[in-house]
Amino acid sequence: MKRIQVDRTRCTGIGVCESVAPDVFEVDDDGTLVLSSELVEHDLDTVAEAVRSCPALALTLVDADGNLAEDAAGR
Image (cartoon, helix red, strand yellow):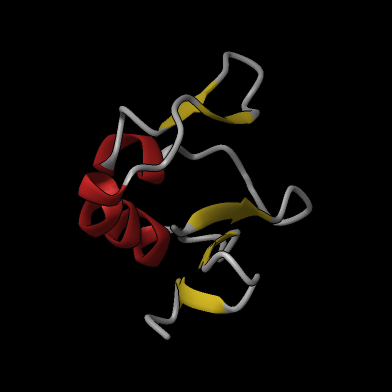
């Protein structure tokens, strides 16, 4: 299973990820990104799109061993 990592030093709270995958990402009123649900495999394509869409390059998708599976550069 893959999981999402958020680089809080890069996240600007713009909310692009939330607009792409609102069941997974939520930006609080103060601009803090909250993962609003556990990542499940059926969400994977949508979450990968949200990760790639992050303008701040703050999101990555990693596998169970912590290896990079997807980032904003589409790697």
